[in-house]
Length: 247
Ligand SMILES: [Zn+2]
Image (cartoon, rainbow, N blue to C red; front, side, top):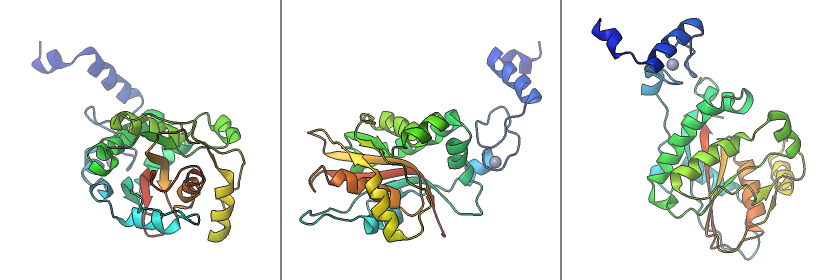
């Protein structure tokens, strides 16, 4: 037998046949993937726009997140940590990674990139003591329509990588709000009011997780709801798959 065929196991053969019938495409550039590639082609992988934000406590995302935070009177808020896996801007096809997870049920694919985020955070000392991974909640009607919460898909992988519990019981979104609110001040006040927090005793470091960091107003609103329940010495950090640049 040809040694090439001897090496092909059943899984590889099935994949080759499936690829012939329905080629798997790179999530970023849309080119057909070869047998060794999963979700993303080698070229796009080589250019993957990692932020490396997790390597430093102070970075562009953390600065922006901190600038958005409204601190209640009498609370001494420490500088909050924040990190995203990759950058994208309006011209970049890397935005497909977050978009496909959010709108097109590409959950398995989303999990792969979420796991990368989790592994990156797990290698950073300042995220080592996270003891609650909390996804940004969706209002139940939106979750019901979509069938899942993309932030929860990401948070589950991050929690597993960090060895910390996933807590979907801490934050909820009882009120539905328009996702397009024009004024920043309105957005902050309005969205803050949409979230409700209930934090059990003993938690010291909460990691908020969302799919994309655009203006930071959603995460800041979640932070505000959490901060109403916990004193300033409970740390609240944030992590997202993507960080939008040049907006
Ligand atoms: Zn590609």
